[in-house]
Image 1 (cartoon, helix red, strand yellow):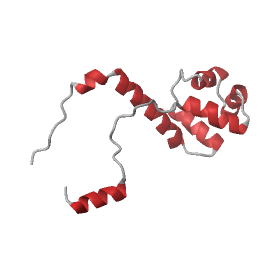
Image 2 (spheres, helix red, strand yellow):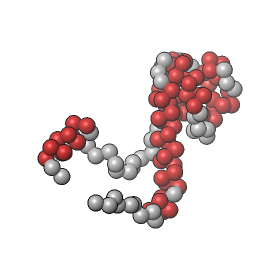
Image 3 (cartoon, helix red, strand yellow):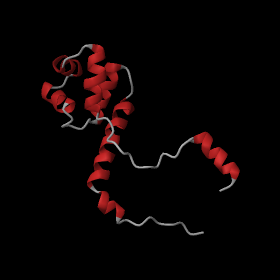
Image 4 (cartoon, one colour):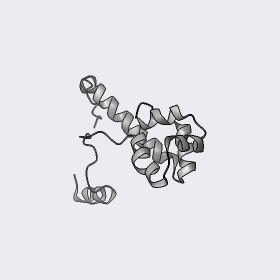
Length: 117
């Protein structure tokens, strides 16, 4: 690799970000429970009412037994003033982690392709 390529690469991303995660990412339900609900003084019931969803839906999300949907991401973004992408990125990180863990051996059997020179 040429020195100029290294310098450009360092400006774009100063560290390699292709290593597998060692710990699971934070589930959006945990983020809601530990950060948002506490900061805003919300209960599961008041959060459910504010979002226009059932308490069961909120309880399942808070217990990390439910994935966050795009519609829920839009609802949370509207309520808390952040973006739906924030919530969906958190869910996507969890989904990828679970898939990597569950299909680890199967994925290792796939041989990467090399481009022709």
